[in-house]
Image 1 (cartoon, rainbow, N blue to C red):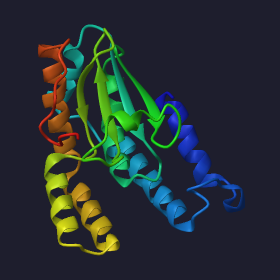
Image 2 (image 1 turned 60 degrees about the vertical axis):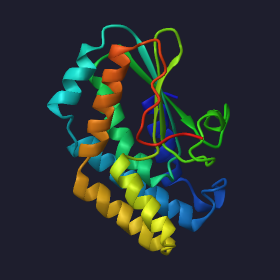
Image 3 (image 1 turned 90 degrees about the vertical axis):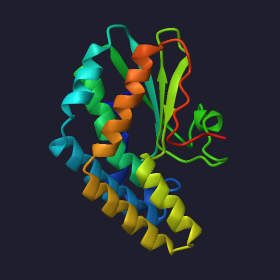
Length: 203
């Protein structure tokens, strides 16, 4: 999907009759997540801006690049990251991004598990030859450290969600952008070698 197609799909879930929703959106809980994420994503799309460094790195790319985002509208982390990926692609027409749903064909997430789980979002950066240059996700390093700590402490899910949201609100997209700078630079420096990012190791 293009971003516009993903956006339309996302919006269709928001407005669809609850009685006609398919799983998992037939669940009131998932519909609530999705409505919150719709607001969060649109807030970043309207108010977010790229850092000067990220904008410059994106504009230095001088040959076609393909990025794949694996996501779902119910994913809170994706609502905070995808807008900045969209802005990067808008900054340079050579950067093309396609969007895939985690739980639909081609089920690409099976090849990009995080510690054995289907955590999303995942950003996969292909070079012109179609080889993976890097894989990023599901969240910035500092946020992941906090997430792991709270999971180890076995806090309630509602507490975990609240703490993640507070982190993203306070961070204002700074860490997402800094990590994208590092990864895009790696792509510029070594276009034909996979770059295994150190932020979240896949297994």
